[in-house]
Structures are given as structure tokens and as C-alpha cells.
Length: 196
View 1 (tube, rainbow, N blue to C red):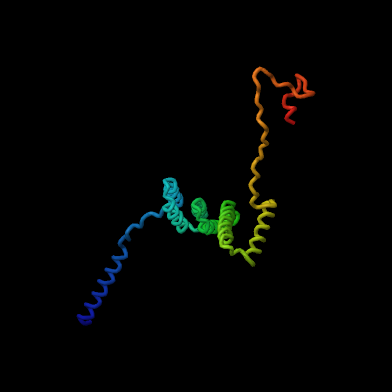
View 2 (cartoon, rainbow, N blue to C red):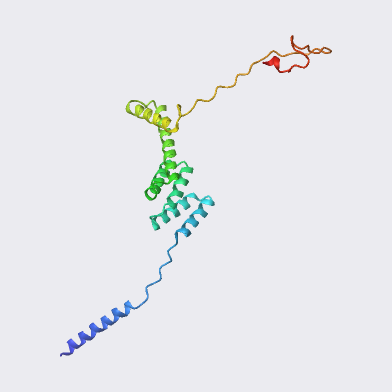
């Protein structure tokens, strides 16, 4: 064996030893993964302090970290609904329904948010005189469906007419004279009978 082969084997052995020693070192510690309860608690604190956007960000982080949980999406949907952001509320509520198709709150948010968006769009179309053709007939069909679902003949009842007050001529009392009872009225009769 030549010296060069012996040195190359020694070098290979040293490289192998260095590689194996690198494997035995401890990797750096990873930060602990927060639990769902911790993330939800942090988000609730942010929401309670009025920082709704930070709360939504934390709920979204919770949804990514725990994809099968519906709770973060419920909070996002409710927060967006309360802010009048109905499109975002519907999207978050649909995420809830992916996880729980029978969730009543999510279904309610979708229904009411959808109605509010539809009302806005119909008002805009009416104001622009653009409600015609198939849009108009489809709107009428939807209104009919809503009336049937709600059991009402009118979706938005008209305001009650203002109360009409009867004006009677003012009576003036004369000093020293008392009013005589109406004819046929006795002293023991009901004083409100004359008003009937």
C-alpha cells in the first residue's frame, strides 16, 4: 500500500467521523406551539379591547393551526357581520358549514348577510332605474319565496297611518253656572256615556 492511498483512507475516515459527530449534536429548540385555547384567549382579549382586526388575525392563525376547528371561523363570521362586512361574514360562515353543516349561527349569518347585500343591490338598481328584465322577475321570485318562508303576505309592511284625532269645539265655562246633564241622563249615570 502506498502512502497516498493510506492518507486518502485516513482523510475519508476523518471526514466520516466529522459527519457522524455533527449528527450527534442537539438541534436548536423550536418554540412551543400554542394551543387552540391560548390562541382563542389571545384573540378574545384583542376583541374585548376593541382591536377587532388583531382578533381576526389571531382567529385566522387558529384556523390555520387547527384546520378542523370551526370556532375560529364562527368568531370571524360574527365579527365581520357586526362590522357590516357581509361578504366576508358569509365567507367565514361558509367555512363553519364545511366543518359543521348544521351550525345554526353560520346559517343565520349567511341568510341575513345575503339579504342585506341583496337589499343594498336592489336599492342601488332601483335608484339607477336598472331593475328590469330577468333581474326584475328573479327579484320578484325571490321576494315570493321569502314571503312564503316567513309566512307573510308582505315582506316589509307599510308604516301605520298616523292617528287621526277628532277635534271638538272648545267649551267655555261660565262663572256661577254649572253644566246641566244631557237630556235623559240621571245624576247616577256614567259620565262617559255621552262620549259613546
